[in-house]
Each structure stands twice: as C-alpha cells, then as structure tokens.
Length: 212
Image (cartoon, rainbow, N blue to C red):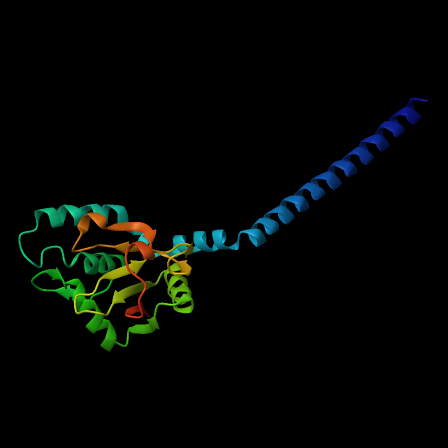
C-alpha cells in the first residue's frame, strides 16, 4: 500500500513538473510575441533609440550650446562675434576640420554653404520636400550630419537636423524633423528641440546638404 502511495505521489510530481515547464514555455513565448508586436506597432521608437545610441551628438549638450550662444550674443561687441557658433558645434560633434579658422577658431556660418557646395565630402539633396527631408533625417539618425541652408541670401540661416522622429506640420503640409537653430538676428529665438517650421519659412530656396 505504501509503495502504491509513493508511486502515485511520484507520478503526480512528474506530471506537475511537466505542467510547470509547459507553462513557463508558454509564458516565454507570450513575452516574445508581445515584444514582437510592440516592435511592429512602434517601429519608429526602436529606430530612434538605435539612432540616438550611435549619434555623435550624444556627446554634445545642444541645450547648453543654445544657452552659450544667447549669452555670447548679449555680450557681443564685434560683427563676427558668435557668428561661428553653429560651425563650432558641428565641428566638435562630428570631428570636422574644414570649418577651422586661424583667427576665429571656427569660420562664420555663411562660409558653410560655399565650402559644402564645392566639396566632395558633401552632397546637396536639393530643396526641402518630404522625400529630401526623410533622406536627411535618416542620415542624421545614422549618426550623420545634415544641414538646411537658406540660399536666398548670402547670409542665409543655417540649421542642423537633430536625430529623432519627424512630426506633421500643418503650415508646411509635411512631416518635419527637429533642428538646432542658432538665430543671429534674434538669438533669444534659438533652440535645439523644436520643429524646422519654427526656424524657417517654407521656401524653394531652402537647400539640404549632408556630410558624406
């Protein structure tokens, strides 16, 4: 009788262990499927996380750069004071040498366009539209440098695309990325975490340049 009871208990234990293993396997599969569903439903989130982890801008405090620029402009006494702030940021962030200047340390911002236009290291994507914006943002999300330059005038404003997601702009009727905008004529309007639409008006004169 005792042997029979022991045998029954042993069989119960074996069955219980197998059930536990099946449940654990099912739970694990559910977790995997849940993660896969999340990735499918929110593909941009994972893309942005990977992009930010590889972006060279992770070592640069853009908010601090904006703050420093505004302080610099308030104390400026010469015409060229602080006009090299954007070239300083991109030079430090991306390890460039083409915008170095012996006197100022870094070239003023209006030197960017002629250098980029004739350099083999730069590619002009053309005017701003959804296709070129998407290409430029993808480049920035891969850790590359993408600039938008107002070519309507010699001293046209220059902004840098910030890695992340684009958001729909009603006024532009397209999805736009955030940019770093150091505004020389109104430094207090500078920022690093707002849409392109806050920095520039939609125009065919806005050209996109990417550093290859």
